[in-house]
Amino acid sequence: MIYTVTFNPSLDYVVQVGTFADNAVNRADTEHVYPGGKGNNVAVIASNLGQKSRALGFKAGFTGDAMEAMLKAHGCDTDFIALSEGLTRINVKVKAQEEFEINGQGPAIPDEKIEELFRKLSQIGEGDVLALSGSIPGTLPGDMYERIMERLEGRGIKIAVDATKELLVRVLKYRPFLIKPNNHELGELFGRVLQTEEEIVECAKKLKEMGAVNVLVSMAKDGAILVDADGTVRKQAPPKGEAVNSVGAGDSMVAGFLAGYLETEDYGYALRLGTAAGSATAFTSWLADKEEIRKRMEG
Image 1 (tube, rainbow, N blue to C red):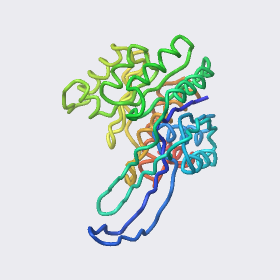
Image 2 (image 1 turned 45 degrees about the vertical axis):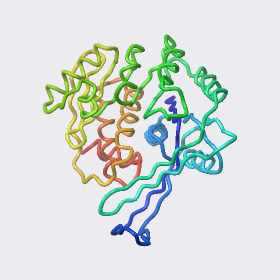
Image 3 (image 1 turned 90 degrees about the vertical axis):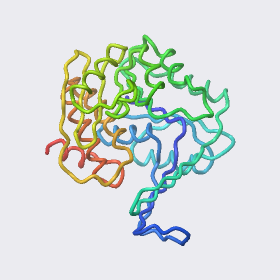
């Protein structure tokens, strides 16, 4: 099973406006509400690809209940910890001539609820996968990823981490099964602007030397590069299509890679499925379904 943790999930209210005008009443052409958060995105794509997924994290109020119900409707198992105060945040995303986002803050998380999360994570067993994605909200200790990985170390759990900067570097000592920086984030880790594939591979190999088992680098329209557990360098070009959505593509790549590996234990196949999943989401209005992903996989 693929488990995910979303510390600060959301309801994403996505609005399409023809032309956004300042100091005026703007009316939506279309509007949708989705369950948000990077871990939740991974859970939905994994479920779409036929993998059992369980979304963990924290929820609060009626917005938290709605978020969890939406995940269940998408085939995900859920086990969120209910908070007695606050509301699961609402993120507003406006798509017009430009894109605008207003992200809510989210509720405070008391220490006893953090311990409850640790107890739930202790039930994950050998052969399972845990995806830790995104930043850690200010209401939680900054070393949450390290605490989780230290507690689960040596239990045969494959942990994927999709985070940036020091948050990513600090977990490498726990040998995560997968990390997925994009090419810009990878360069930032080493204080460089990476301009060639050779430079990307060089830095990816350094992260592998620092502890990562597999380093998957997403490169938007240029596809992805994987330095796998055996040290083999693999490149995958993306399928052709028009990008219309910037939300969830990286999470979809993580989910596709993990689903592909669990399905076949073949890194080449996992890379192809991950790239197809990331591209399929970029080509659709929200997270891609199985049919769309498989279509991109084939062509």
